[in-house]
Structures are given as structure tokens and as C-alpha cells.
Image (tube, rainbow, N blue to C red; front, side, top):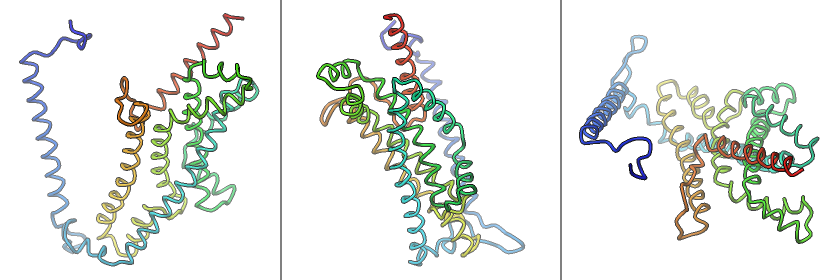
Length: 314
């Protein structure tokens, strides 16, 4: 048994051949599905006795030659980025406050904060937006922003708490030994290190925040989807819905994939400790939805161990 094969034996020639055949069959099925979808979209269709061209026909894309269309699209992009930027800053500020309160040694601060975090995490973002819009009458923009701040702030707070718990105890002990108070140690020594360590996962969470701005469509906020699909689609007609959908999808992919790439790059750079070094051990993909659950589980485990050690020492 080799070091790389602990649970399973290395596949033999027959197993490798079967795996290759299955991979080729799966690839052919995927290609066939793509060809079928493209041919279905390209085929002409009839609606109400009227023959309409396929989705890739030039008459379905000619509106993009009008500069005014791109003005409207750019307004939707700006509205989305504006809401995401304000909500992102607010979520980080809220997350910092919640992480400090959640990791406090004072029980009457730590326990209510934990309840508040679980309550906000359990409420759907869209329900928050509707509640804020209907009860507080803030308008569509602030309904979207406040809801995103509350929900994502709790997640970022848990991420930062995990970063604080993951730090070696020697960091705090060294700070206390030079005369710092516990709060000073947390703010000046521990928190900057935790923030830097968890920054890739925070950026990945901001990507999720950016995508959640699309929920503003329901509350009447003119983000990208509402501007392109609803407003422009209603003005120019249903024949342009597919082309507007494709353009909207391309915009979202360009923004989100760029941020995801930056989060992965930052994660590798943080793990390697600087430029030109290889990271030690496996690097967690910050864009993986399980990354937040992983760091939370590690934080809870570390806190429970510290609690047992403290009770045993007492």
C-alpha cells in the first residue's frame, strides 16, 4: 500500500480503460446536448400564426447598435455596483462589530450576539428587503442595501470570529505581557492578523452579496436584471428578451468571475506568505460555499476546546 493510496488500491488497466470510455461517452453526451440546444435556439418558430426568426438571427440583436440602449444598460450596472459597494462596506463594518462582540469574554455580550447572528442568518434576504420596504418605507435602494448589510454582515462576522479563534494563543499572551489590555490586544494585535487571513473568504462573500443585489428586482430597484429584462424588454418587445438575457448574463459573469479570480489569487498569495513562495499544504478555495461552514466549525471546535481546558485548569 502506497502513501497516496490509503483507502483504495490503484486502478488497474481494465479500470482505467472503463474510466476512459465513460469519460468519452459523457463528453459526447454533453456535446450532443449543446448542439441540440443551439439548433433549437437557432430554428425559426411561429407565434400566433407569425413566423419568427431564430434566436441568433441578426434582427434579434440589432438594438445593441443603438448607443441609447448601452446608456440604459450602463445605468443598471452602475445601480448594481452602487448597491453592492455600499452594502459591502456596511457588511464589513457590521461584521467587525459582531465578531468582536461574539468573541467577547463577557457572557451578556457574547450570548445575545450569538442569538442575533442566528436570527439574521435564518431570515431570507428577500423577506428582509420586503420587511424594510413595507415597514420602514426606506425606498428600494436602502431596502436592498440594509437587507444585504444585515445578512452578509453576520456571515462576515462569523468569518472574522473564526480568524480570531484560529490565531495562536501566544499572540494574545505576548500582547498582555507587554502591558496591553485584552481589548487592546484584540484590536491592535489579533484582529489585523485575523482580517488578513480571512480576507479571501470575505471577498468571496462579497461576490455572493453582489449576486444577491438581483433580488432588488422584486422590490422595484433598477439593478441590471430589472433594467435589461424588464424595462428594455418591455420597451423593445419580447423578440429581444433572449438577446437581453445573454447580455445580462455576460455582464454578471464578467464581474463575478473577476472577483472570484481575485479571491483565489489573494488566497494563494496569503497562504504562501508573499510573492514568489509556494503555499504550504492545500489552499482552501474561498469561493467554495463550504468554506464559511469549514471556518465556523473550526472556530466552534477551538472555542469548545479552550472552554474545556479552562474548566479543567480551574
